Image 1 (cartoon, one colour):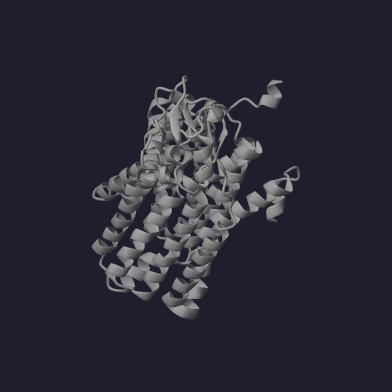
Image 2: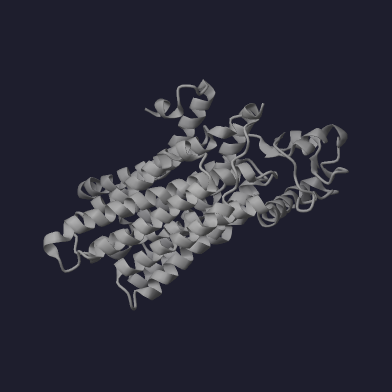
Length: 476
């Protein structure tokens, strides 16, 4: 089944990479605890306020570490960071299972938030750089779509599996099953490639002239790395386009490489990545668009509450939520087919998605107080929301791929993490809005307003979506 996803024309090595990437992301989200961790906290005596504070700890941890972890990923082995992330994830779920107290849950969320920050940007950069080394950058959107589809599928399976696991062994069995899958996720991370990091063609050409220099700036102002430094570091590089000398970070000449080299290089990568994300127009636009499309999907946290407010039985709520997950799954899988869409086409799609989401929320809300029509109305409403969710998810995958194509500097993971951080900011705004709006509005109205925000996002998509790079072979 996985082999079929890779395409019949893919080389065996590319198929192997695709399968490992899909398994890594899929197993990482095959976590039964996802379905019930809020109830786990409540059943161990935590109040709603305490549970909310746990979520705040989780979000804050991921927020604070998003960009620094990306710069770290541009400094050390990305595969090693992914392995370390798996270890932290496994430890976090084990802590929840062994120490089910507020402190245990809080520490578990810190570990989980750290693990998420380490993966964010790091996996995407590793995948893109490995494809770039093979000359297969055009496969990035398709493979990334498959990995996201695997994540969505795994989430659905984990949610469905939580019910029998709870009936058989309670929270303990759910907890240890989650620990087991997190550990397997860590093992799969060990099989991922340790790809060379992509830098500019200018930097590669200047390697021969910079022997023994470590980091230096050539006459053109591009970052140059000596062969000695390359051999001493896991950050081997291959060329992939020019770097603007106005924003690229100048590498320090340390007189004590053992003491200061790693930290100086970290700061250099951080400055380079953030600089490119701010000053290079195509990258800046891609970062902002990706953040908006990712962050606005935080509205999915309220799908179950929408179904509950409409009067749907608790046992049916997961089925309606599953419709929306199916939408995102289909959107992910189709990313390979839609990767060439223009900014105008994406804008129309996102705008249509906003109309569907707004309408679906209001239709589902009409079921409240109408018990005879509750399942017809919620079914129609959630179907519209599911289609909208799939459109937005697909647009997010394509926008992410275009961002990777637009990045020309060596700090790819840092730039990606800037987009992830801004996406978290958008998500926090969504959560804050929903928390405040519940004072006056019903859940259907709140979600309808959130869906309406897709309309202004659609307006900026035309100009913010980075252009698709020209295929050299087609140009010839």
